[in-house]
Length: 241
Image (cartoon, rainbow, N blue to C red; front, side, top):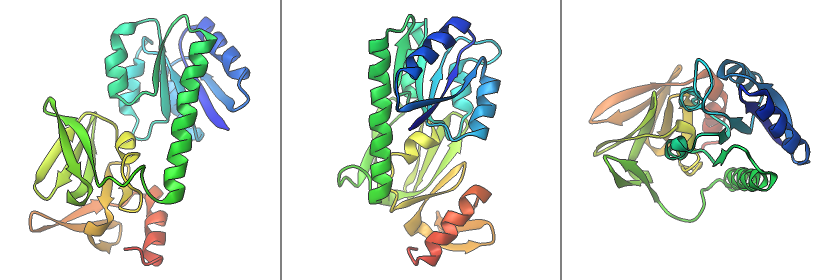
């Protein structure tokens, strides 16, 4: 069951999307939100898989709201403005629907989300990412840069950007931590904080609420978030480190 919320300041748009959702048995509508602040509370209070997000809203746009989220759910933008499509997809949106939205187009977008969530679940169950590649590409400095998994020390989230720290330097790319986390093999990388993902092999010690690794010949300490500590300790107890 896909748990969803709708974020839109137009009552008619909320009604149309709710009507469409009610026709799909696999989606459960958790809440209808009229602005980003209501949506933020809904995300904090519930485990949300999918967010239908309008762009032009008062106080905080859908684009800007999505940028504030460290762990956003799957997002389908619903808007009357086509101008933001490129930026929307750069933020890893699953789809971009232009109003008025037809039921056929709505179903196509929802099926994309369903496929993505199923693939994500399979990756975690199998303990590996799709395929046997040991690298991936990110957009940085107006080009695609190859990143080898084994070269990564840790990944740091910084506002709208992600910094990939490597033994040979760093790569800065515009995307969310969640979107990058989904591309990493779970048997090699562990999220230890909302702002940090660590290459498990690079961890040299754990001291209190800090993870230690070597960066540039010096000890680097990263904080362990309270929401990630139990899983990290469980990983240690299973002798996987």
